[in-house]
Amino acid sequence: MIKSGMVTAKTTSFGILARIGKWTYLIFFLIITVIPLIWLLISSFKTNFEFETQAFALPKVWQWNNYAKAIQMAGLLRLFLNSIIVAACTTVVNLLVASLAAFAIAREQFRFRETLLNIILAGILVPIIALMVPYFRIIITLKLYDTLPALILTYSAINIPISVFLIHGFMKSIPKELEEAALIDGCSFGQRFTRIIFPLTKTGLVTAGTFVFIYCWNEFIYALLLTTSKSTRTLQLGISFFRSQFVVDYTGMLAAIVITMIPTIVVYIFLHEKIVSGLTAGAVKG
Amino acid sequence: MRNNIIWALVLGFIQIPLAAGMAMILSRRPKGWKTLRTLYFLPNVISQVALAMMWLALYNAEFGIINSLLKAVGLENWTHNWLGEMETALPAVLIQQLFYIGYFMIIILAARMGIPDSYYEAAEIDGANILMQEIHITIPMLRAILITTMSLALAYGMRHFESTYLMTKGGPAHSTSVMGIILYRNLGALHYGKANAIGTILVIIGGTVIAFIRWFFGRKESASEATQ
Image (cartoon, rainbow over all chains, first blue to last red; front, top):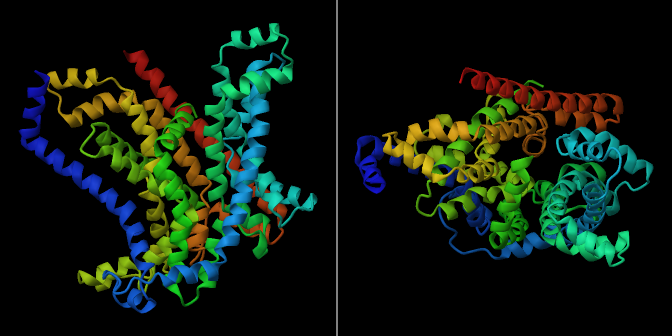
């Protein structure tokens, strides 16, 4: 019954119109999201002359040379290294603090517990650009301006609300009996955390960790605000300087941009199911 | 300030419906929908900085692909120095963000997938076409999530900074300037007080917008319940 109903719906003129509309919509967005990336990739293999004169042609000779030049000119190794250091350290610091906080809030009874949680979670809604002055002043006072620890501390702090939110959700779902059993077996407070709760919240930690890592990797505003010298530049900040570094070498710049995109795209291709489901889990409640 | 409102409105009331439309289409599982979903979301994992740099090249007046395309189809008069002219700069930076609907699409799609198919089958038997089904089933069912994404989008509009800073730095002649950029400028000039004032306004406006939306839709909800 239902099947045949659907067939008739498709054969009516409305059905045909709907299908045309649907595919136009899908293809339009595909063009907007994907074509620029492909154009970027192809252009990065052209000579500058080809790039400026023939916008649509494929390069006659694929200029792999652009990439070698780009890596050298932009100092990409340094940029990648800085970004990895910052992102990795931040993830560790942030998860350590956030998981302990989430543990206390999810598992202990104390006054103002709910209030505390709500205050922390309100941090998710605060626009981070509004906090530029306080962070800037704190970092100056700590004499950390223009160092990588400045970024690590700032990023860790900024991400605590979202991490607490994610990890807290996971911890709450662990049955209390497990902990009570551990308590009877003589586990201390610390042991309960390290032996029972921490291993059981692994999925939550991975989700939160992925979030934090991606955030750090893509962060731009605070890197711009808190560092100045070349040696502390992170990848994203580095990219924004490409325009002045590659003044005449346009395709070299495009090659450098492509290189910076590769790691995220590769990670995304392998983990997209996880990232997508993590995002929805975080957002549906948010 | 005016630009912030434009940003918020464009993201909240154009981007969200676009994303919702996409989610509705994808939720009916057309051929290759999983691949499409992955591709639409792809720009959201690439950093704003890299995307902004890419669009700088696309919008470039001399050899950007947009102008080349217009020339190729004989619309030379339509070519612009997109980011350099007063009239086109703001639309150009808005469009760059507008069509990256992936993030909101994913959220709405997940919620849409949670609606049982049987609702749609029942409507189908009753003779409702696809459009009517979406209007009368999907939109009411997804009200909560649509409100959430809309408030998120409005909040993003108020705090917008990155892509504009990277593409135009607020220029030409402040035509694309947003509060975030003014804040950053003041901070750069060490006007902490003024910068902090803008920051405070941002927090307050963001909070008010979200509270207002919740209140507005919440009121409607109770009103519709009362009439039933």
